[in-house]
Image 1: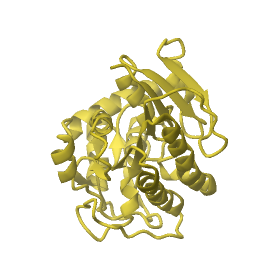
Image 2: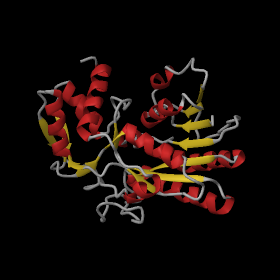
Image 3: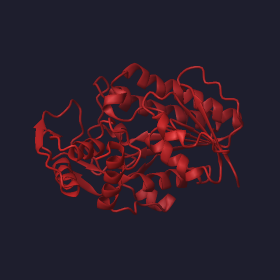
Length: 314
C-alpha cells in the first residue's frame, strides 16, 4: 500500500539513503533546516512527482499541514564537529523537536520512528552493549548536548506512548558509513578516506586501540524500514549496527591499503569523553526484526572510497 512518509533530517547522510529506498513506492516529504544536511543530496529529486522538500527547523514552529502515515525522525547533527558547533541548538533539536514531531504523529495517528544512538551508552562499562545497559554518560561534557539530548528524546517518546498511546519505534544506531557522507563530516571513516585520497596525514586519536563497529548504510536503512514495519506493540529500543569490531589504527591501515595512499599515520590526544570501546549486541534485532548486517566491511569501504573519489575528483 502506498504511504505518505515524512523524513525529518532527510537531506543528511541517512536521510538521503532512506529517501532512495522509499521513494519509488511512497510519497516522500523531507523536512530539513540544512544545518548539517546537504541540499545537493536532495536536489536530484526536485522534479520527482513523489517528493516534496520543506526547509524548516523541527525545534521551532513546525507547521506541517500534510496528512501522513509514517514519520522517520532523523533530524539532529550526528557528528561531533556539527553537534558541538551549536550545542544548545543540538539539544533543542532533540528535545523540542521530539515534542513537535510526536504531536504531529498524534494528530495524524501516524507511526513514528526515532533514530536514537549508541552514544546514549556513553563510554560503556559493558561490552558489547545491550539495550538493557543504562550507560556511562558525562552529563556536562562537550558531547553531552548530543548524548543527553538523545537520552531525553527516548524518554519523551516513551512518555508519549504511555500517556497518549502514540505509535512509537525507537532504534539505537551504531556507527554507520557509506555514500552520501559529507566530506567535512568529521566522522572517522569519511575523515580517513578523504585524508588518504588526498595523501594527507591520517589523524588517529589516542594510541589507536580504541574500537568501533561499522555498519554499511544499506544495511542500516534496511533495519530502519524493518523496524517501522513491525506491529504497534514493538516499541524498542533496538540496537542497529554491525558487531564487527576493529581498532582505529587498523581502520587507518586498511584505508591506506585500499586507496594505495602515501599518507602517514599521526597520533593526537584523545578528545574528551571519547568512548574507548563500542560494539552492539544485536540479539534483539536478529530475533524481532530478523535483521543482521549483510555487507562485508571491506566491500562497504570500497564503495565509500569510490563515492569520495568522485566527490573529491581524484
